[in-house]
Image (cartoon, rainbow, N blue to C red; front, side, top):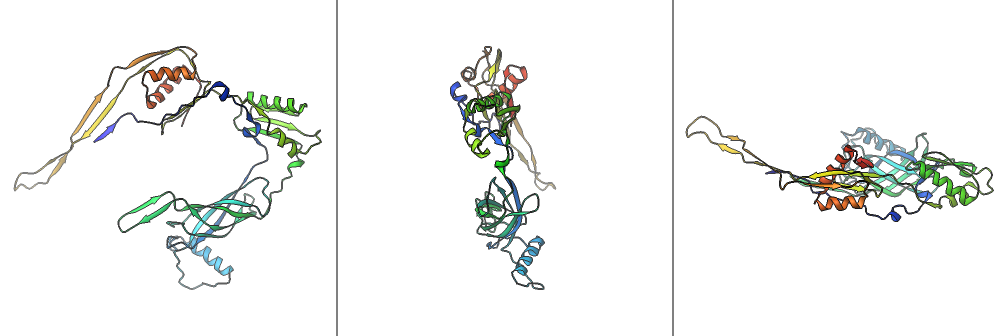
Length: 368
């Protein structure tokens, strides 16, 4: 029997008072400093020591070639030999070189199989150079691979939990080359807002100029505030260390976010509703399959067949209710009114989308 009905979803409401919704935050929590960023690194390597779960050499010839080259560099000649190990896997190693990373510091790396290896559990990544976009080597990775998933199988069944062909090596790479970047030589720095907003950018400009007592900050647009340290006697790093801890009230947009897969709804306190009437009804559709087997007559030349039998029922439930939502109400008022109707999360999603279409919901509606 199959049932098609309203899905029970997780419904999350964000209830906060106006004071909490507009709490002060530090500048460093809402902006990025232009030029201060990480750099992606990538490399090709081999994971050895697997328990028979490595690449099939015949299907992954690049694994055999890489292993042969490695052994030759170590002084082992395997040319002409029947070399078919199953405890080696070819992998791609990725990492992010953080800003201001220095020689000798450690960074985390991720390891992902590119062949037909079944499991990287228990394997060890051998020395793998990590290159940046310019082709230069900035780090070298090596170490034991940690796997979050597992795979177990028998003669007639198998089970896989997580992704056993991908893992990580905490502090698995050592930085060998630094990126040349003299931050203190910059006498002009730009702050990039993570959520561009003219009001927030203006508040950042005002709080910096007011606290320092000089017009060193200029708002360029909704996402950029430029700082001028030309006349400052302090270093750029020291100035930013103080500025990033200044606190302000960031502006917030009226926004409704809906995750239709999980049924999660998040509404901000700035959401406003115009006068609107809402009707709610319950709809349930039930489909039942009851196939019938038909047998041929005795001694007849025929075969048994299965005839489909489908039962379809549709019920509206109790009559729908109609509620009037007054003009310019706030989020708590809307929630209280719809809860009085017994609205389910799935119905709430449909109501919000319809209210947006009708022009009664004054907020940005984001569907995921």
